[in-house]
Length: 292
Image (cartoon, rainbow, N blue to C red; front, side, top):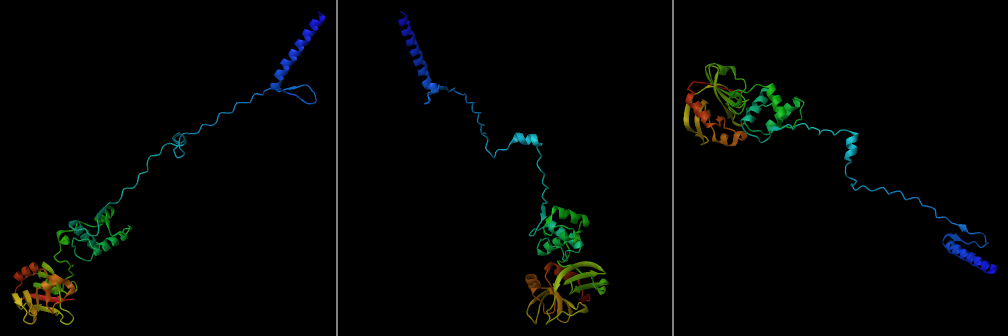
């Protein structure tokens, strides 16, 4: 009986060893030197820290929260209003005429107003701008017009619409008494005075160097409304003869070609209406003064 128990105890021991041995194959390692097996314990691995979540906002998107926290939103910058153009080269009309008359008051425009904004007006405007410390563009802006208006009075009707396209110069003293046709070679104008009162004026041209218009004090010898030159066979309407064959008369050539041509010694007038009106007023014996 004791032997049976002994055999059972041995069998249980073997079974225990086998059970232990079967478990050891998963968690232990046998050593060749016969030492006791070393139990390997399974260490816990710390969890991997959560990866940083990528922003779904693109790189170029502004960080509005950061901006709002760093500084207050700034109002948009205000730009200075542009200086609008009032008149420029090529402009025409009453406003240009006023501009030219005002510039003439400042001695920056040496002609009578024409109402056309050309190269001469551009140069005059540029001179005014330079005088005022402005950029010399030659174009009248609102600022330039305000400055010009502040420095000049409103031109009169005569200043806006002078009797000639060329300014009259100071008359010869002989023209200021009685009835006189005052002819200036310097200003190339004819002025009709009665006792020093200017009645009318007009542009004129003279003879060439080969047939100059004589200078001095003369008088009207005779009048011929539809005169034709017997020397040159050319029309001389509204002729007022004052020195031999030289006369004051209308010239179609002067009206067409201007100062590119010249007379044969006569005083040519290019405004037919003006010379016609003058012809009706002038009397035989009235003075004619031709001077430089």
